[in-house]
Length: 119
Image (cartoon, rainbow, N blue to C red; front, side, top):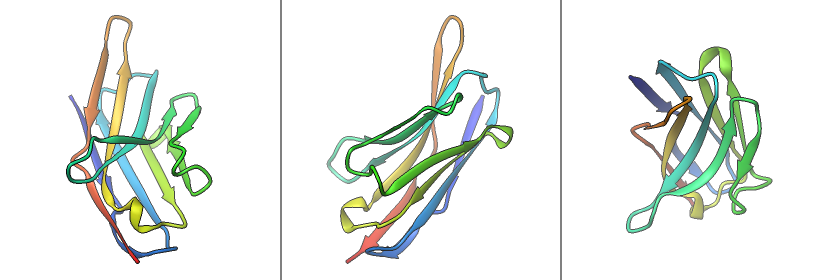
């Protein structure tokens, strides 16, 4: 089994910064994608950013230039540096891991961490 543990959420003023971390434990494929998604009440969970085990990144248009995703493969940890935060970034942020195996893909989610940006 795989477990994802997020940390780093909290309350910040508009224009401020936060750094989220997500540590994965368990059996992790050498080929995988880790990412961050967010969700607000009444809305679908949406992609924020992803990064492959090879280091390729993808960002939602709304966060490009403000957020940076990175990872430490030795620690099986993914980070999300969030700068220039605005109230629209307020959400529960979830970490996701896609383990790619020869015959299947296994997806895991963290428990979520709240990010609140005050105006």
